[in-house]
Image (cartoon, rainbow, N blue to C red):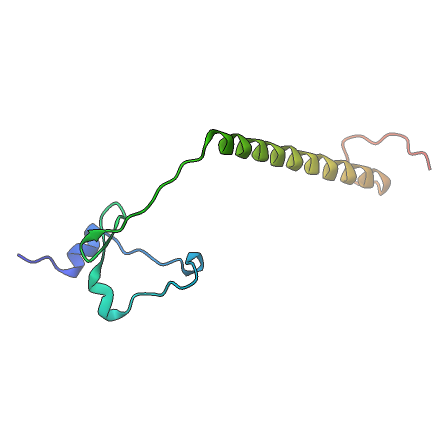
Length: 108
């Protein structure tokens, strides 16, 4: 018994394209080419029944080390920006009598 399109879609749902991520020179597939393209349950892509090769990569130790340093620096910068914003608000709130944690004596 041949499977219907509805049976195939129940087993493997449709995928939607993210065309903003496509590199230059890549085009969509025409209607007369669609029967060459396939996808399985895990999202593996097939062209004319053959799996499309996807190359995976991994970072070297020094690339991972650099990424951790950059992520840590970004975290420290974000915390510093938050503290600076809180301090600026606190100072301003004390000057205009708005709610603040504590307001000391202002020397004007």
